Image 1 (cartoon, rainbow, N blue to C red):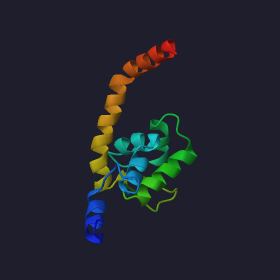
Image 2 (image 1 turned 90 degrees about the horizontal axis):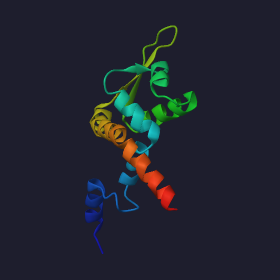
Image 3 (image 1 turned 90 degrees about the vertical axis):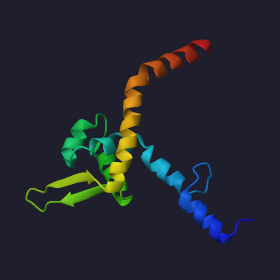
Image 4 (image 1 turned 135 degrees about the horizontal axis):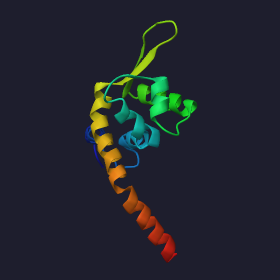
Length: 129
């Protein structure tokens, strides 16, 4: 039976294949389709809510707000209220979010480059069924 000390070390290192590992929550957070799109979009510069709403096709205001709030609560996005009239709020990546954005940009590029192959595989599977 592992000691408490080794359990803490294992938790700190993370083990995504262990159902009880906190890294699973991180995977759930970043695997969200909206997070996959918003985080890389914030990499270049701070953006306002309406700009994000225009850039991320298909997202509702409610879902954008919810996703930004969740990313902020998890330390990936920083929200800055510039305290102006009318209100001006900008969102930007934290250093942690910036480190994640590099990986997510690669996933986004992979999806763009391979969507036709995935579509073809799905059509072939339907034809076999």
